[in-house]
Length: 375
Image: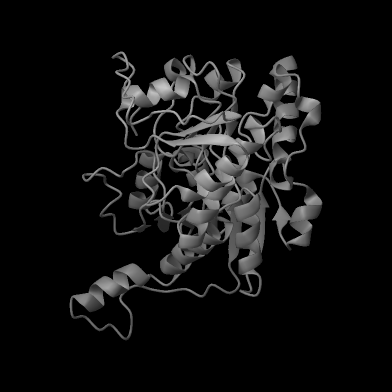
């Protein structure tokens, strides 16, 4: 991902970004998307009296100039740096199309009093289904079997041993929307379900038929581990040499969360040494995955290219929800979901926030961080 070039002054193209004559209540600028249409965003924002500018194809300098006068800035993959944020003097919300906000300098936005929005609810079915697909592909060794058959082999008695899924223990790291969906989908598969999540209510886990335990115990007891935690400072390299050493030799690790949750070098070492058996990965520390990455051709890894989020329906949901959140903030309201709830304290509006159910864990995290800071 590349940040907008801020080294050269803008040469404003009056034709490409000419302003409409009518007065608008707010301006929302979409700076990076790659979608076939942005009519969903335009319809929602203009219906609320806003001006919508799709700047996805404009030169970076012009885009940055537009952002200086934007109330809402929307983006997908581009890096939003502290230097850029300092120029967003009018901005109320930076909304990232997606669940994570890795490519936005959230701390700089918070210091500037800017809400960092995101869309944590748009692809729950897709990601949970994809996690199940990777899980089953690893359990049944679908990819290596396909490759052998493609080469003309026909191994009725199996060169690679396969083991029954029923009776196994599945550990879910992060029992948010997607982790809960995985738990629901695994019901009826006759597996034992464990979960590790410092912010989830025990009653929630119990209702799902999931036993809530700490991460170390989950690593020791699980045959399959599926990662569904957000990428936070405390979850960066959560799966590392120490936690991998706790896992069973037959363990399968699935990651559809964020790449940096796993320390790549430690995972490769664990797979090569037989410390764990397999991994199914949709996300990576470096994306796109380099052509010479050792992950690409590892015989014990099943890969997909950060596609777990995608369906035609989820993409439309993403665009609509992002536009609704920007409209909500730019017309004086507060978002349902945001990555930096502490900014509301800076804005003096924390008491107004009614977080969506899926975001209540953030309040517990803020309390925990405050306790840690006081010690």
